[in-house]
Image (cartoon, rainbow, N blue to C red):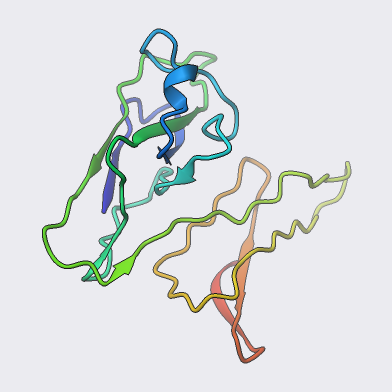
Length: 173
């Protein structure tokens, strides 16, 4: 399980930690106090380790489930700020990783379904943005984390099941 503690709750919009198993992020962090990137970890090889935005609470993983963190891996946090009154205050955002000593039967994997190429035409009061993704593997979905910026007003996520039917994962009208 991962727990998020935003340092400046007035300006932290979201936190997305990534796992850098290659150590390549060390080359981007030249002086040891972080590096700038937009919309991700700045690496093609990093994988998501979770996500947080205001209102989110820690979600314990199912019994026997864990995320594997390889020896020597680095955790890179992408923190998105919304300036309050035009300024971002100094921030000491932290994350807490809860380790397991029990047997692990299933390995957790976080993934994002994202559409970054959409265009909302001026004056369109109900633009629809779709994102598709997934796998042919047999998976169990533990949680879903819808997230939009500023203009989003409703969201619906459906899963297409192996038998061709769909299951509503979330619907916020």
